[in-house]
Length: 349
Ligand SMILES: Cc1cc2nc3c(=O)[nH]c(=O)nc-3n(C[C@H](O)[C@H](O)[C@H](O)COP(=O)(O)O)c2cc1C
Image (cartoon, rainbow, N blue to C red; front, side, top):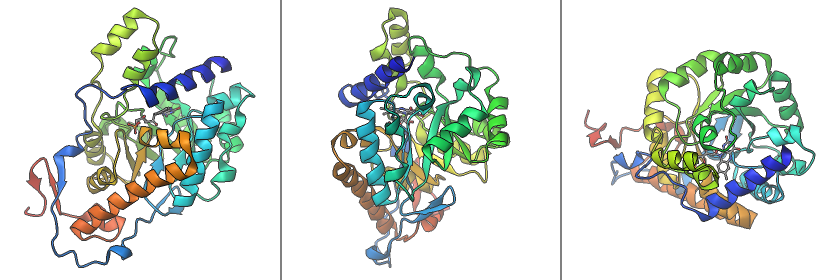
């Protein structure tokens, strides 16, 4: 089993680095949002602060390295580079699925990044569907203990599993099981998608189940039906994946919908995030944090310095957007009216 997981993880990384794995004719929807330039910002660029808090920790920027990997030699290098860069830049970081940590003794160190990331929020990760395949509160506690994480996020990935050869397909009765985990584990439990998006109705159910944050992981970036299509050996599944190459709720629509239906639960915008300007738009329409996965992957295979460079680029772009509309804190950005959504200016309303 563990060898199988290891091989799958390595193939995922390779395909995400080398192939076109984006959905077809699919965007995040953030291109429909624009800022209304403020020619008189009345702020000093150097005083702009990106500081915020997440999982009871103050962080230097509202950014998350989204869950990617662990459980192989390649993953160990990637996670090490991501962790050190995230610690230096004050970003939160997620691990890829930590299932292999309990199922195998090899490459355990790839998940043990706390030593390189001592102060930032660290999130462990598990497929929610595993709650139907032998995992429960005890395993979640063990994972959190072994990794020293602040939290664990359960990922919902039905469309990925159904296209993946041999995927786990019993997604029945997960909500009460998620609720049980939230009740029995003394750490914040989050829920994320993997690129098909969480809408407001699902988010409301998850909030009622007790989750501490929701990462929408919407469409417009990496498409896991595309990735699994490239891996699949089954001609039926391969062809079906093609029919679903534009499936998913765009990230912008997820954020708007979740904000409409749910209050008081931090929302992470992710799925197709590439620039700091994307982040500025997502925060303006209701996100508290912004997550980047594939955008950081190539740099993560290179070095800590390469990841930090990507991070600095994203931070600079967010600050430029804030300068352009004259806001100097994330709180002010959340409340700005200098934004036009699908041609509707909030400034003039
Ligand atoms: C190589 C790779 C591996 C991933 N593995 C996981 C995983 O183990 N668990 C998870 O929840 N999401 C995983 N994801 C999904 C991301 O966290 C993210 O939700 C998705 O890729 C969409 O974001 P993006 O468009 O920024 O890539 C992975 C993504 C990549 C690129």
